[in-house]
Structure formats: structure tokens, C-alpha cells
Length: 538
Ligand code: HEM
Image (cartoon, rainbow, N blue to C red; front, side):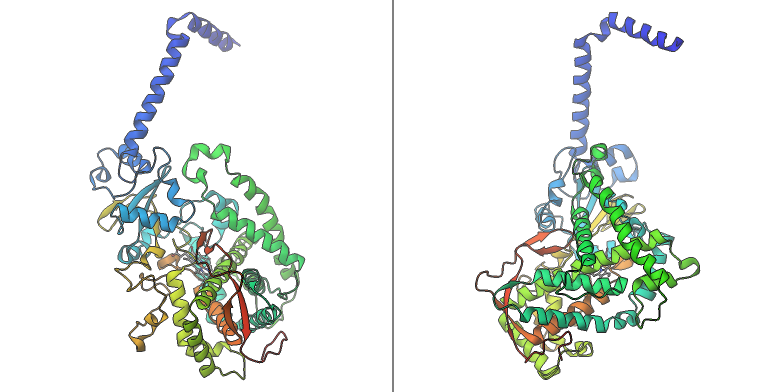
């Protein structure tokens, strides 16, 4: 009570005091605004923009302050180069790096976030293979959707290492991939049968996405669905994946401008809060069903594998849900997106398609369907897939960025702890200094017998590493490549793929979480073998 009286007394006195006139308050506000503007401009004047300037200003006389700055665009005061991350960011970043003469290493700011990006394979190797960049930057939506407990966004440490080991030894080991062969064959046959029913031009995307989702549903949850029946469970999961995909693919301003966080201006937090419980219920229900079912099936799905773990590997139910949800999420669209790009290229380049057909006729013959054991001999088809990965990597910026755990030096520049690092794989794989005639579609460049090179796309050579590289390299790369190669071989063995009369092939891109064709591919097909349209085409 006494203190209330005192404060009233202070206000009463203040109101009499000339220092608190309206005019003085207005002046003070103006001075504060001008000071804030001046500081913002000082931060912004630093190469790379405000986040880099702010860091240098705060570090004062430290070694960073004296180090030569990484070149890069300033963007706008306060927000920096947010525009670079909107729409086709891989193209915008490549253009900015070119104009700043900073292809090896460029700095820019996303609000308060310091970012470096490289469009050079040597510097990319330095970043991706360094233990310093084994972490991922925090993304609010990823945390809200439980991805911080799954492999992709788990902070670097014991938990993440345990998940990677479990994934490598149990989920993506050759035995597990081989175990799903029959399911891939069944789904390929269903796709072939589905396409036989289309007499005119049709859009392939829907069928590819459904096939890919059914495939993951089977590998992860042991659920088998037919391609042509829209089951409620599949519909529900598709909606959950689509919503998660959209949310995670958005540039969330509050990740970079923390003072906006309370407002949730893009409603991302709100949408996550609606989605996360639905995912928990959906995946939790399937885990609970697996717990009560005795498992004497031939193939263990991912839920069985995770439930069978013992000791320090054993995961809690909520961690298991996060890991399984991520697998569905990551495994579905990447595969469908890549197949659509491959088909588009083959429709455009009919000479390449007829060479693939010749190879299939020679290796497989028209009397039977393709088997996975044929894949090793389909050298030209493999080269085609690599060439499509070069020109249309599903993750042109390698999907998710990396985070520096400690201060480090990259390409001779000092990079402080907490900096986000990106690799522009799209720019590297189209760079004329790295690839001859980079914009031309030439699968022969991967055929050693025809003057090309023997090349692995699995991350050892950073001139083309669509699955990333180093500690955080994609753990599903072999599964993804096996699925894409086998389905492509089957679809091409059964059909010649032709442009539809209504639409030409348009290679424009749209970048969501993956880089997809902006105009979905529409085609017509002409059967090459006499088909027996059952679930197993033989
Ligand atoms: C064509 C298919 C695929 C492509 C192009 C692809 C690409 C990528 C890329 C570029 C990364 C980031 C790597 C890095 O930071 O160095 C990644 C990470 C990841 N991918 Fe894939 N991926 C594919 C298929 C799959 C599949 C089928 C799965 C699982 C079912 C999967 C699961 C993951 C996971 C869990 C991570 C996070 C790894 C970590 O942070 O430790 N991916 N993928």
C-alpha cells in the first residue's frame, strides 16, 4: 500500500516536472528511433548484411572482428536477404553469388540469422564433411512437429548418433531393403495396370505419389493398400503428410526475427499445434496395434524393428512415433518427385528413351517383367537417373541446412559458431567449370566406356551429391535409389512414354520441401509388351 502511494506521488511530481512534457517525450522517442535506425544501418553496412554486422559489432576487438569478411549481399536493413529464400531460392542464391563474385563462399543474413552458402564442390566438401557442421539449425515448425526427436532435426549428440546407428543397422540395411522387394514389385505392377486404363493423356503425379506413400506405409507400418482403392487410412495419412510438407517447406519469419515470435504472423505455430496431435494419434494407434499383435510375419516392418530394440537402443513411444513419422514423410515425396522428373526428361529426349528400351530388351527381354536382380546390368538407365539427379536434384539446397557447433575456418574465412551453412548443389551440378555442357541432358557422361566417368552419387564426390554427404548424409539413399531404379525400369519396360496431345513438357520448377515440376507432367503411354493386367505383371 505504502509503495502504491509512493509511486502515485512520483507520478504526480513527474506530471509537474517540465522534463516530462509531451514535447520532451516525443523528442526522446524520436532520438531512440533515430539511434535504432543508425545502429540498424551500421549493422546492415557489413558485407553479408545485418546479422553479420550485429555479430561483428558485439564481438568488438575479437579475432572475428579483425578477420576479413565473407563477401555477400547486404539485403535490407533488419530483415537482410529474406527475399533470397522465397520461391526458387537455389536460383536466386546462385545469381547473388555470381553477382557478388562469391561462388566459393557467400555470406548473407536472414533477419538475425547468419548464413553462409557455397556453390563450389571443394568448399562444399569442407563444410559437409566437417564435424563442426554436424548439427541442424533450429526450425520452430520442425520442433513443433516432433522432428527434433527424429533423425533429420535431432541435435547432434548421443541421441542422434543412436538413431543413425539404428537406421543403418536395422532400417536401411541391405537385408531390410531386400525384404521389401516383393512389395516394390507388387506396387510397380499396380502402377503398370493403372496406366493401362488411361486411353488419353493423363497426369502421372497422383499415381506416383500414391504408389510412393503405399510403399512407405508398407515398409514402415506393414500396411498393404491397392493403388486404385482410396482407403480412409491412406487418405488421412496423405492429408497429414501434405500439411506437414507445406508447413516445413515454408520460410518461417519468426525463426529469424525472434521479436515476431509472439505474433505467429504466418500462423505456422497454430497449424503445427493442430497437426502434431493428429500425427500422434495416427502413428500411436499403429504402434499400439503392433504391440498386441504377435509377429510371425515374414517381413518385419519398421515398427516391428523399433519395438524389438532392447537396452540403450530402446526408444520411448513418443520418440518412436517421431522417427516413424519422419520416415513416411521423407520417403514419400522425394521418390515420386524424382520419378516425375525422369519421365519428363525421357518424354522430351526420345532418343534417350529408345536407348533405355534397347537396353531393357537386351537385358530383360520382352517375354518377362523386370526383376530387381536385373538392375545391376541396366547401366544406361542408371546413367539416365544420375543425369536427372544432376539437372533436377530433389533437394537443390540439400533440403535442410547445417549449423556450426563451434567457431571454425572455411575456405580461409572465419565462420562463427551458430552460423547456418548451405550447399547449393543445384548450382554446382550446373556449373560450366565443373561439368562440360552442363545444361545439356547427356546420360553418356556417366558411361566410362563412352568417354564418361565412373561416378557415385552417394556423397563421395561433391560435384554431384544429391543425397548430401558426411555425417548427416541421407540414410535412406540406397532404399530411395533402389525404389526409383526398379520402378523406372518396370514403367519403361512396359510402356513407351509419349507427350500428351494437350500439354507439352514444361520443365519449370516450384520449390517446396523438394523441387517439383511446376506444371505436373501429362503423358500418353503405348504398351511395349503384351500385358497381363493382374497385380503381378509377368
Ligand atoms: C530420391 C530420394 C531421396 C533424396 C534425393 C534424398 C535427399 C536427402 C538430402 C539431400 C538430405 C540432407 C543430407 C545432408 O544434410 O547432407 C537427406 C536427409 C535425410 N533423408 Fe533423404 N533423400 C531421399 C530419400 C530418402 C528416403 C527414402 C528416406 C527414408 C525413408 C530418407 C530419409 C532421410 C533422413 C532421415 C534424413 C536426415 C538425416 C540426418 O539429418 O541425419 N531420404 N535426404
